Image (cartoon, rainbow over all chains, first blue to last red; front, side):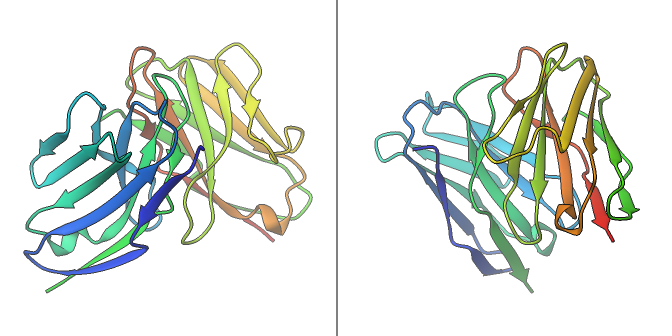
Length: 112
Length: 115
């Protein structure tokens, strides 16, 4: 019930391409869905987040698509760059000051 | 985003000793802080929720007597790993949430190695 399933585990995308990472959840009480980017040896950095009242949110090259009925959300990275190579985690929580449930992570590699 | 600091960034200690890790929120007061542990190539695992002025709430399977958490002020939480063993070697990361917000900001992490 508390799980967030993330796929793929790893992803290789050519420079300039679109990177797509997917997450699915079961707990319908989740109402906050952030994505984090983590470089080796560093803490996760908040990339973008969405609430269920909208179906899409875009910030620069990063877009979250949210499908409430399917209980799925995804991260799209447009014009992927080598500097985007990192591990990406989706997460979900049930409200302010509540703990996050993390997905298993996706290791993204952007090749020239 | 908010600035969260952790100290030390790396620590090596001998088996059986205790290690204290500090987490500071530099931009805002945080009534709630979280402590995570992350093993290589794995996701973040929540250890406990730290609330200012009250006892921490530990996740199932986390030994509260081994991982002591103190949230003495609205900007500082500490995690003490007592009687550390090699299996406690991991990357420990804290996070904070502003009192009125949803967004959770993470510290840079502390690499603990127990020899």
